[in-house]
Length: 614
Image (cartoon, rainbow, N blue to C red; front, side, top):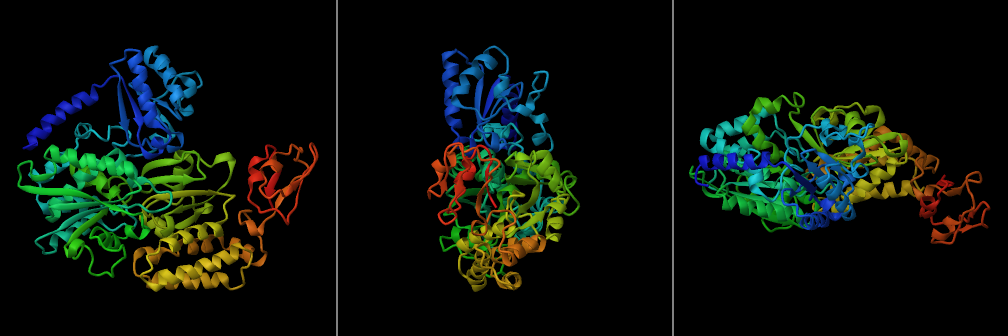
């Protein structure tokens, strides 16, 4: 591709093919659906098409559709019929009844798309999708991620062409600044300002880097973008390279993301083949190349200076700042470093303008945010909403509420670096400043929902266990301080808490926040501080009454069999690993508390809900 005209010629050709595709089937090829055998579903469709001489229906393997709880997902176009939890055995029926006979298989469709009269509405009209505003995820679940021409058909690489041929470096940076885009990796630093600092740094060599390390428990936003739309990140990094004067970039991605790594490498190879990476791009004299660097899964390598150390082949430990990467980054040269989601917004900002992006979201938090919605929620999955959307809207309108009619108790945003938001703050707008004001943070986008059965002391302990395990150990406040906090939490949940423990936790937390070397260490105490702030009564119950109100901390509860509910079926006896349950058939059973190890196996097995932690 020697000129911009070549790109536009290919765009018209690819767009015509893409838009005129009448009958086709999209099959989710994201990690979640792939682990549920979506590849075998594709192979089964191909087999059925061959047997039935069907040659006019295209099968497209896409990235994540978002509704991960319902995978594997198959969508049949042009109707937009949404099949959920598809099994290979279902494919024959879908082909025969829907593809050949033209009648959707109602019992296999996502139930919210089937109306009372038996008609079917497109999946885009269900609450989970219609409440979203997809920018970073605009192509995920829409295009074949391994086909560059499908990306080009969706205006792909036109932003790069626009930047290289009609905008000065300063104009690109100014557009990003005016858009109000803030870093989506956790800190929320203004992206355009970071680019400007790097542009103004004097050096013969500069670099662009992408943080795709994504180490928060339950987070899979960046992975899904790389799996479903890798070219958006490549294009954005090339634009950043032009803006700051860099000719080389690195994508730092964890090796535990094999599908993302594979598709990103395919996309890089395709971009080079089409002349969209490499030398003299569009004949403008601009050179830019990309390489992948694999990380070993260290959480601390999500911190920018530790990531830079790892790219250089050194131990992944943070460096003191200043100097910041914009002045001294990879190999000591000025470096722009943003995360995947931040880059995924850039092409749309360049194409549509700063005002367009700024019109979405709030005054100080422009645009949208992608969240990995998990925990006690019906619609587990990936969502993208305008900044300022309330937590209530995300949980109840998009997420479908709490399973089994349980009450919402709290939500954790920001992962191990974030905080817990209690039920009475459920109408808090989700944006950088609103979350910070209540002791939480945006983070990279993990959003874990908790119900009445969650113990908040145990939740704080879970996140602190993760932080202690992932600490690089370089600075004493993080290496030692978090361990001391965890020791106190372990004592509290074991029933050995003492008066003054809460105050000790608060004192340790404040000292760690003030003295840890990097942002990860400084934010490690946040889950503890926020749970103490909003759920102090639970800490006090554990310490003073030796009681876990949620019935979660096993050393503070007993397993109890209800005399009224027990039918004497004996199923509990069959699963008890400690032989702690006794009783005759059709008689109330009893538990020997000295033998009981409180594993909960009997609770899960009892069909009459007669056993519970008390």
